[in-house]
Length: 380
Image (cartoon, helix red, strand yellow):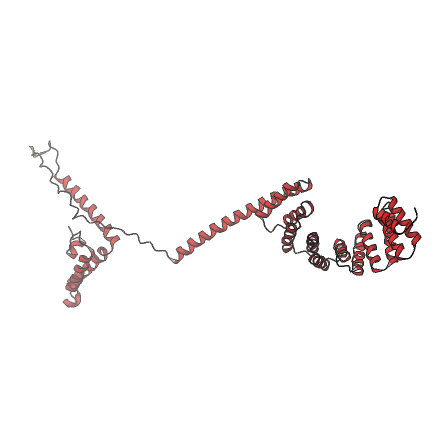
């Protein structure tokens, strides 16, 4: 048989790597062609030593070589056994063969003779592996976020539809709960903020919370007309909280965004009339609001009365009388209007007319008119 690589290096099959390296260094120095004048024989031996070291110095290649060597040894032993075995009845030249001797086999090698190669997993993450792992992680996070976003959108839409249904059926508690759930899943839902604020303002009269909800909707609104409506609602809540100056500011901001918002004109005029006592400014705001309002609605007795009162306080009696007369046409049985007409007649020095107006107001059950008639020494 030809030499094994271990025999070429002169080491045992169980020799550690350090012994293999040492043997290679010694043999490489011994067979180096330069030391033997370029002899071809030593050159071949040098190459054989280098080839043997190249295989045995690498753990993976050495293990593979040991396995192949083991298989070759087994094949050799099998062939040897096949040659030595003969059937007992086989004759050679008519003479029976003697019985075969028992097959001699070597005892199993001890643990000291066995050569085990421990393969250590050399796991190193390359840059490409890190990029791939991070990409997968980011993809999973984005996928989860996308699924949550879609589910939140679906839940918000469903709760808002249920809230609108309850709102139209005047089920205020259910509607408030549905709108709150909508905002839990979608905090930027303008409609839910606004509808919940309307319930807080108009049903529960919780003006502070309603103002907070309207303000949240305002921050999310981009259309000027919608923003003007929200500012008007905020002003109403502030007026309900007796915060007249902030309410006036809210109404003014609403009118800057939408000058056709009649409700803001009228609300600002009301504050200027009763709280600030700016009667001419109040009359101007009420006039603007009435002009805008009459384009879509019938004349309002309430706002005509307020404007007449503003004219009266400002000393513009003819204008006040015109408004009061118009209210009287809309509501002929208003004892309050007869009382106001009586006060106006008193200021103009028309005592007889004043007494007649007070008498009519008292006849309609308006107590201040009866009191004014008595104090004015009007006859019965």
